[in-house]
Length: 125
Length: 125
DNA sequence: GGCCTCGTGCTAAATAATTAGCATGACCGG
DNA sequence: CCGGTCATGCTAATTATTTAGCACGAGGCC
Image 1 (cartoon, rainbow over the protein chains, first blue to last red):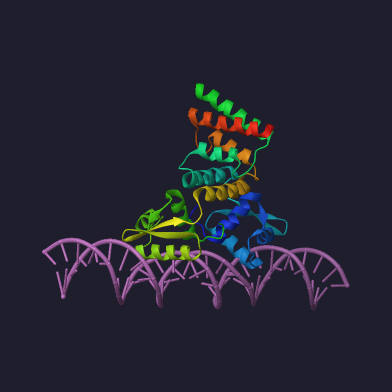
Image 2: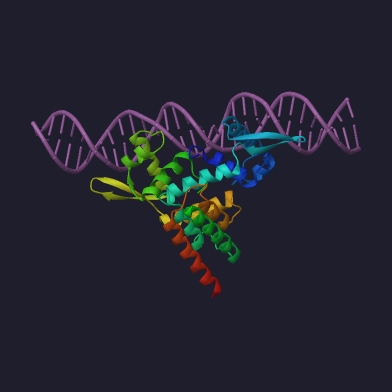
């Protein structure tokens, strides 16, 4: 995943965020958008490299990542942990709870509490 | 940060991971390592772009990111939340606790528990 | 002093990435 | 039928990135 070029990465991020998108949607969403045909050329390259695929949606193509969002998440998380948190999921979670990246609502804290409780139960068995 | 080229990103990741490194160390750590002089040329570009700086360490330079690891972390976390978790810190934290990316030890769960408790206290005031 | 090693600054060539245009086909409306 | 719009496949030109070599200086050893 670190072998991606600038534009490849930008485009894949859009697809991971949205799940699927047309070339026109992707073009609009790209930072400093290139032309429609430049966008399509990039899509073709990513498809050739095996990162994405397309389906027909009426008269046009819609593009999807080849790996699931879950899978892509896990890969991205892992890379981020290694790069910024010495591999420590706990530190990353702490950063999230701490609000350096976002603020958790009470409901979200409850949700996380439930997960911790469950993780503790599983640790006991 | 999404405007970085392939090699730029690879190199910065190394510096964020290690905090500081010599050109030789960076060269070795780069995936599919280029020559020493190619590595230095890349460092020069990143320095010109303002992403890194160097200090003298005896007869050689040692390179550092221009932004702190804390800051870089926060940026990376934010981007990852937006791309893979619809902006939800709670979902990301859940993924971390859930172990899809890593398994938390009992001590780590305690640590996280303390942070949740504190966040809840702050929510009350 | 000469040679070697280590490190830097700089340059330019090679390579990869990015870009956009052309040709074509399908469809629709006048 | 013609023209316009929308979409694709494909190509090649342009631009950015990556690469590595050269020249030079510092330091150490013989």
